[in-house]
Image (cartoon, rainbow, N blue to C red; front, side, top):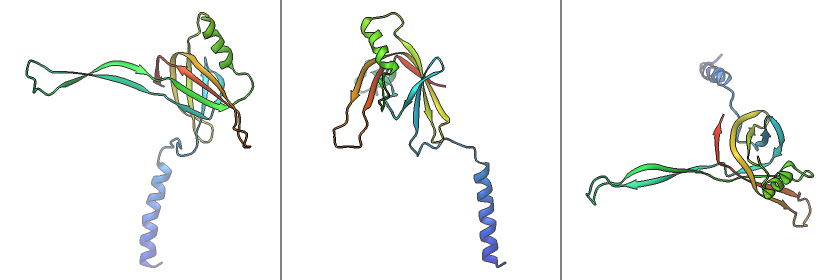
Length: 165
């Protein structure tokens, strides 16, 4: 075996061994799927989720009476954005009935849900628990008639808080 071939082989084998020893991680570069659960029961899969967001208001103040003092910043009120779910329409959904409960002001319309992020193999990659949710809107989006489009269902959930599990 030539010297250059031996050096190349010695360089590649340790790299391959390191790659095999690396912990498995979810592949988010591929198109993931999402599942919504209520008390551990799936409410269906979703193709798009957006709005899982937390914002903390920034409060500024100056110490003392010096107008040139550098302002200090403190965390203020925390708010959570609405979460939007979208998927192909699959007959009457749980969300259509749920929004009816909200419209009627039925007791217990707020529910705790889990948003499960799936990797490309369909296994759970991450989970977020969403607290005191209720559907703020439900929309059936129809295709434009050019062919090949799917009727889509969109649900916007009001969320009072979330945590990653």
